[in-house]
Length: 248
Image (cartoon, rainbow, N blue to C red; front, side):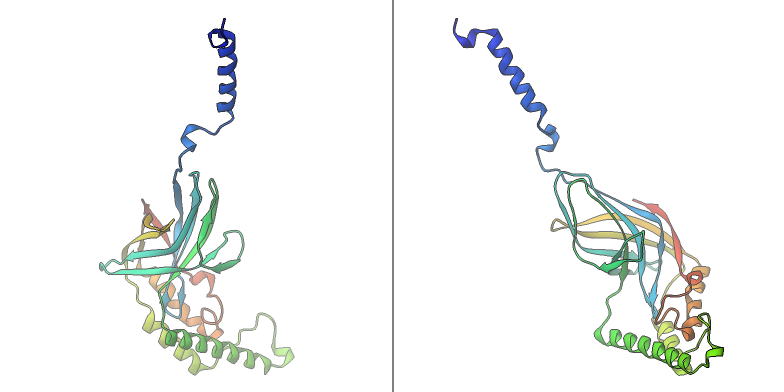
């Protein structure tokens, strides 16, 4: 009997084929699959740099596909209660577990990789605006440092509050009030990016600002004389956080 008519031979062949296929990945993984899952935190912060309004939100990127995903040009589009649209570029990424942050760049996720970052968005500013804010921050910081040096040893402790020059503080408050524009009402935001070169919307959400939110933010100007919110971080009790009410 010829070999191809022997059932025992075909049994061996089939067994070998079965073993080979059992070592291969599932058929569903043979073709490239693009599946990016994105979630966000339940709150959004609205930081400000001398009145330049930004947004700060926790974003969870989970690449559940079988090919690498590159995310670039991440933006946040915000529709205000009056219907106007503001588009902001991401400036910084920061890690939830520490204070480390780095300037925005392309995020590269390997297959099955997950990255969680706080994303900080700010509006674009002109070179003149950057120079004005940088100069004012430096002058207020120098003013506080110089006045601290003039204190006698018995007058100074690490908790001593030293005020900056009043003219510099007044200039900072004027700039803050001039640039800070917020409204009460419902804000609708869309998180978008270029995913492997294609522009896509990856998350939409809503949040509402009330009068007390805006009053809290404006109260930061009262601390400019100490450098808080200008050359240093604002008082944590005066940071603006809003609840995200709807996510799609």
